[in-house]
Amino acid sequence: MIEVEVKARLSLTRAREVLKELKAKFVESEKHYDIYYNAPHRNFAITDEALRLRLVNGRSVMTYKGEKLDDLTKSREELQTTVEWDST
Image 1 (cartoon, rainbow, N blue to C red):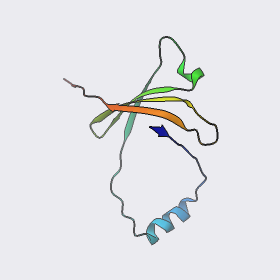
Image 2: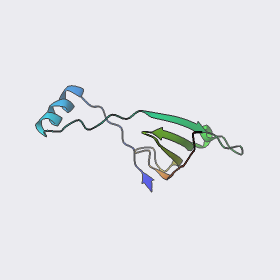
Image 3: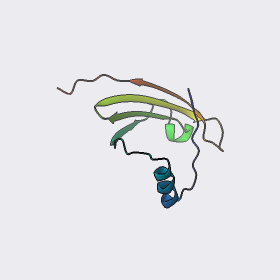
Image 4: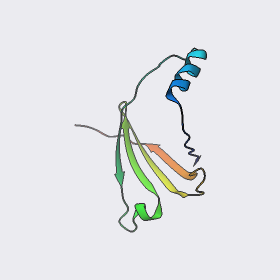
């Protein structure tokens, strides 16, 4: 999958107004716990890659993010899989 990330400035007041107009309802809140890893044969900070284990709501997901394909949208290849683990 190709992840496309675009950042934009946002007025929190206007965002709340739009959500109210749309009759949007709060569903849930999530807390993410992220652990980032590096490769033994190259530095991901230099190559602009990432390998992350994310724990959220009792699930674990391992994600690899490749180098940026362009600087405007920060598009990159993203691969992810769930990870089973035993906390005992």
